Length: 145
Length: 435
Image (cartoon, rainbow over all chains, first blue to last red; front, side, top):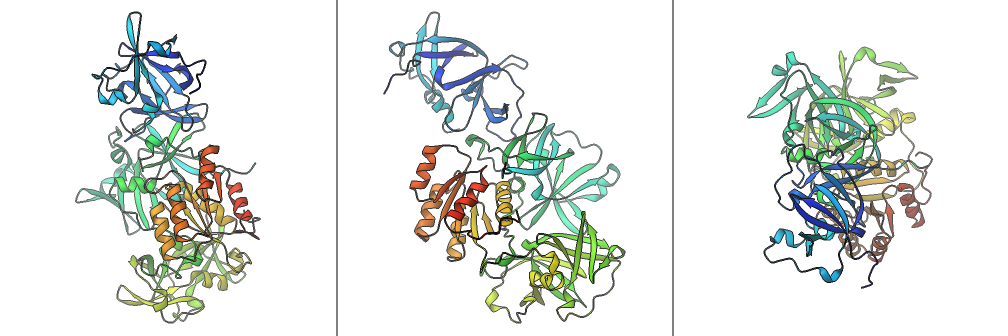
């Protein structure tokens, strides 16, 4: 595997007070909450369709995907548009944090106590000052829905 | 700029506070039942709502109900969108009927593909997003069986389908003789006031949907006896590039029957032959022959090749099949469309030498495009297969070609598809001026 310059760079965000991160090269852009068109009968984690400059993509609420408590009505949220090779996808999260430098050596395997549902998408955990970052793999998120 | 094939006219409706697009190709008519009449007009048979549309019983499907939308309580009138899917019709009840708009079909993400009730989504003029309803999927959610497949090409009728039942519309004509035509050929049924019929250059015509529609009477070429004069003339309307109405006395029924063309007797220039339907001797009319004889100027001249190329189109989206099928027909091909790889195989096995090419979508439930390529090759190694897909992925296209497809074409480039078929000699000499 060739090492990429950005491999240690992660975008952090929060969900119900917990800190998660995605690799910078998996993220196309980050934006304010947008109006979404609901898709009746869709899986519960797909909260609607987003029109991003004429491109239509589903928005997956990560709280629902990861079985967190639902966001309170009226609570603010942010959208992360993923950079994918095929179909586009966006994620709804609570808030965006920083771009963090988290070198490969600092990452640890996720503990066995993580629910199986999370294990497919959580690639590792990385302790930083004050908290632990859960690193997510978009391929795990895009897989079987 | 070639028009992209994925642009289709659609009706926008609103239900549960949300907009949906219904492809125009599925629309038959719009019915509004006002508040005063709705209690009487909408009947309930063991819990299922029905509406009587000119004597035909139309099952009603509530869009709020099937999509589990938070529907507004039913106040005011009822908007019914009459939908035709295959040989079946149903009435889709929506909160509000809005405008028609030319929409661009955008495919849904893979995670939503299993929702058979949508064929895609579109961005509306105001920037909002509307889901495009797949009317067969909606019918399935409501428990209406629409599996009766529809082929819409004249030449196909009566020559194939040896064992499959075919839907026929049965009617009486002339002095009461019973006749039938395959329902798949019929565009609409109409009742028009007889005094609206005019005569132009020896042909009866009626002004219909901004067209001058000729009316032909089967009894003028077949010995059926003179038809009675009716105050209201029922018409079976066909669309051969131009609408043509066949005058009938009354519509009897729509029935599914197995007709073996080799067993029909009495085939003439204007009939496929005679068979027994609903206990009565019934003439199966060759409508194309009748119209060509009686109103030749209204039949678009078929291409002067020994035979039109015939392609089998495989796509799980009815809207896409309608859009591409219409285009391919307009450039001189006959098209049989099916909704799955499995159906395509059945069709190919039943008619081994009928098709000149197969066009298949890539991403489908069950057999996908790769499975179709392999299965077609196993069946007939010489049969050219073309893949059309929304995926813009060179590596994928290379795999598609390596699997044996002649070409991998983006769904927005239907001209390129026809060019690829010309390149393979399938549509050589095809008259494209009609497009």
